[in-house]
Image (cartoon, rainbow, N blue to C red):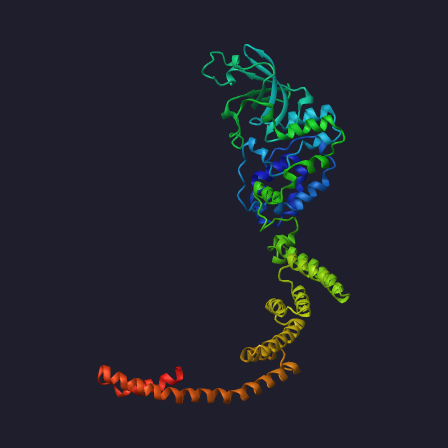
Length: 473
């Protein structure tokens, strides 16, 4: 268990939570390993924490999950420069309290409670003295994002907290009343309600040290502050209205980006449900598989609409529906079979065969795909018979019978074409013999003339020539 995080939670909730933890996590060895350290924790005393019994009970029961280091299974993304918010990969919203009815005193108390040393604030210079200048704070620009312009908070930037510019002997001479300054919180006195700030980069916390301090322009003001001004100017701007107008809200990869930002893996997602903690999510629970099922269901609706058009003779509309189904789900078997049947009906036999074959590749046992492909192969074989391509036609009939060995039409067509080929075979043999008789005297004359020119010719060579030449002829 995360010892520091657990101790921080106990410091806030107090001893009542500790007692509940000891009851709920008594058999948890990880808790028993840190219980001695937790007993030394100091508790904040506050009368405002009454009524949190349900929250404490939830924390106590789920402590082994809540404080488990395995929550973060990925490396958190480093905080990017504030100026890079212009790209806005996620919706940058004004603070939620602007949309709530919180009193001035409550909001002011929250700022003094939450503001920490090393945070970044933005303010406008309202007074310059020989020992430094005073800022009217506008908003926070690092860590917490709060808009505090209406809270009338002031902060002092002492002259020693202003880096020397080199060309000015007096660091204050570089600044004027009305300049907008981005500064780090140097110190905060919650009792006296005094804030001091600095322009030295080294004063910032490590997560914010990349943000440049000093004078900034209005264009460099935080996005959430500019949007807060819109909310203040128009009371009809609801939280949802502002959210939907953000560019980051429309980003299709916003969930992936935010998971990476906080270091949570979407392939091994954590959950408060213990059943999901014991094993990984099944493959069929992921979006890609669910999307495939949705696409198949949507494509099937298009196929049904296409079949209805086909039954009423609206072939163009039917073809459009089948094509639409295949755009949604490329390998949808029902759509391929239906479109193949329509192609066959229109006489486009080769296109029909292609669709039926693709359907059988995706579902080898599809009954209609086998039936229609068998019938279409027989029809194509008959076309080839008319073109005197008997051997190719015979191959199609045999293939049709491998799909449906009981198909009477394919059996009859194969029987007829086999007889036709057998009847034509003797005629073909007679032509070969005739060619051989004609070619043999020619060969003998060729051999005699060759002997005269080249001398002796081997008897073996003569025999091979006599055997080969007539066949090639």
